[in-house]
Length: 415
Image (cartoon, rainbow, N blue to C red; front, top):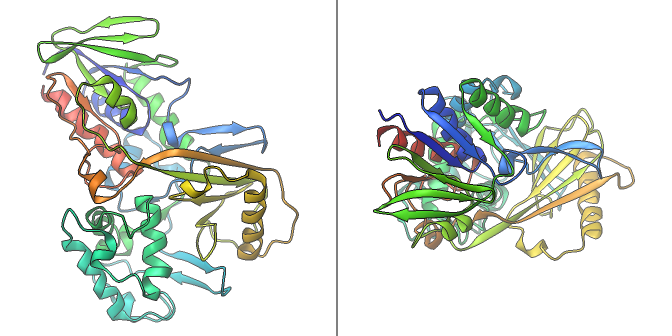
């Protein structure tokens, strides 16, 4: 093992997971972050318009996300997740007013598909058997190349679930990436797809404990530290040029670049990365939810796609949301609040609200864009890549981001 320093550029979950793995192994680590805070898209912050602390985005973890849960165990944040004993997903069809709950059984043998009260209404067991076609998808196939899109099962389950997982319409989404999600969760039974809810926010569960762990293990964290360029020579990174000075890299030093794809492309010569992105927006309302409302509700036939019920607010997530990038915010907030009223049985005027739009939330998880994702290893001897846009085998998810950081850290350890 070398005794050099590992410089990690970026303190999102990919960078933090790399840092945690490295400091735990005894390596000297320095984390450099452009912003004045860590966490990237998973940070929590105080929002003045609401008078509340919110998450930058609503992200769902599942009990099958093994790397994410191991990360939480390592940093001491898992106790901050609400973990139900069994898998249950509540849905509401805004058009028909129908409620239902999807309840996979715990074991791998999916007997639940034969139980009418556990599956999507107006679907049969054979509909679910057909989903196995996804698992043998080729790299050029889309979701609807493998499964039918004109069924109730597709419109009332697969479309909303895969839209959220891929952040693009499943009709253009990579069937292989969709299969990877299903293979690691639903195909392993209900125990692997229990929804885990960060009731106090993603920052307190995933970010704050990671920062404390890194600092306790002797890692250094530098915020407001913008990387401007990397100097190259003899097949390796020679220096990191920051806004306030240059760090010369020793022969044993390593670099893990855990920044967004479009930033990495400007820093690394001839780097191939995804070039198309999809938006996500989250709408937050300062209104305590009814106690009867599920913590997470999938919504069909509405602008609202997923409704999250926190102790003192209601939050809505809309994926593949490019069509709303230029939408007027207040009419959109009123439309969503009216939908929430129907879903949750609330009769109240529009409360304090905020809409957070992220235009380049994730890469577009299409077959073409998936093929552009680079591996963690690069042609530069001391440079590794991390981020949910790298070739993790998963869509751009928390699990993928954490996995990418761990892959990069392992490569740095053996270099």
